[in-house]
Image 1 (cartoon, rainbow, N blue to C red):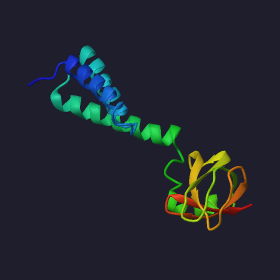
Image 2: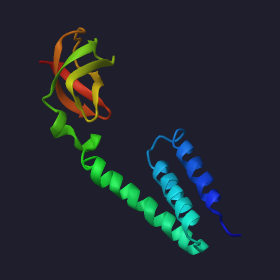
Image 3: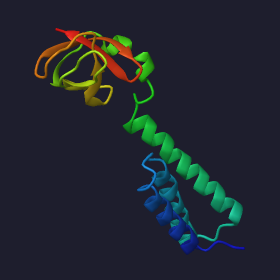
Length: 146
């Protein structure tokens, strides 16, 4: 079966629309790669192997370009390795925290991509008080009075 240019266009649009359901921001690049192949097929007569090779090369180049140019430091900070970056930061409680109860702390600048984090504490601290991050325990920040 030979693939026509419109097969690639429909497939590319389907992948771009599928990105709405899978918000990983990866499918869009393969969809755009398929649209590039559709454009190349409209201008040139390529074999199936050349079409698939062009799609793969263009798509992977777009993915690599996205992570290299627009998201250069995305892979460097991981929550499990972020203790040194977070410990000592001061924020304000937006929801009270007590032993065995979770609270929420808001930071002036985002930390690890978010400005509001769930937190735990060894003592009861009222909402509106300033707290300091003492440790990272799983996906929670352990806080104490600042």
